[in-house]
Length: 162
Image (cartoon, rainbow, N blue to C red; front, side, top):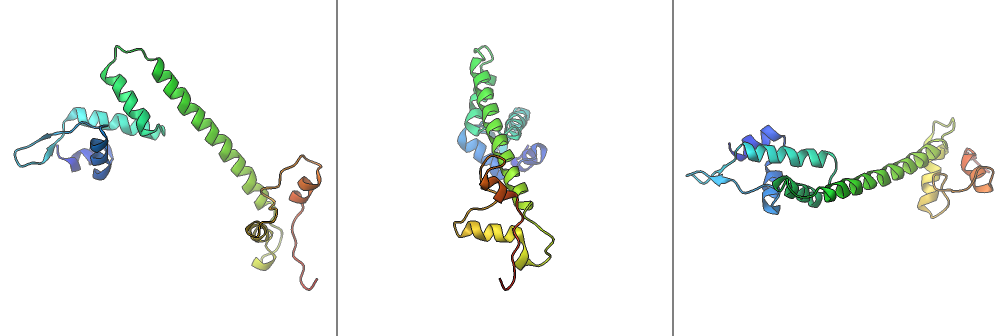
């Protein structure tokens, strides 16, 4: 099959296939008499393997290492376990970071009062304050009951003419 057919069968862009060939993740295909790349079922299977690893957000360097194990099934698989453990640690760290981001956004969203005018918007006030280098509700840290924590839960209201 040609590169376009391989890409369509695997759901991968042609440029991605060429990149995988260039980096050694995908072996060079045979060439037909007219010079076109001629891919076979092994290319499609390998490309599907790479795509599955990438769907698990495994870095390309680790995908390459896993492919080495596929090529040498008699090798000890301890490195595979360590590789997946490292990926799991990266995912857990990202989850923790995303949970912190969720808390920050929820705190910021909590600044919204009943105002329906941008000039009175608590969220906008917090973002402007942060841009000026001032404390922002979504970045104030403190224990419940502390002055900072109390400030972060109080709605921000802009008063006209005050």
